[in-house]
Length: 66
Image 1 (cartoon, one colour):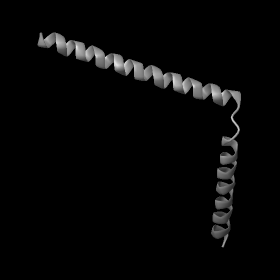
Image 2 (cartoon, helix red, strand yellow; image 1 turned 90 degrees about the horizontal axis):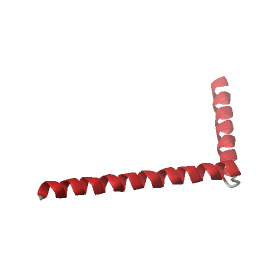
Image 3 (spheres, helix red, strand yellow; image 1 turned 120 degrees about the horizontal axis):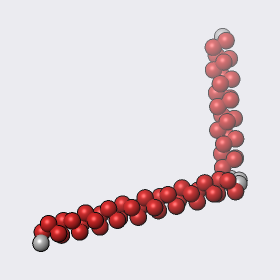
């Protein structure tokens, strides 16, 4: 009987945390916006590095062919 009560209590706590998390997602503070900007900048930098690597690889392949 205690296991059943603990299971229900755990489920209720998990549900409350999930609902609280969903409600918190709507209101972004300046720190969260700054974090998203940093994430986006890092992703863009990674894409640029990847493109540059592909260009270098293409140039090396062209040099081998000639």
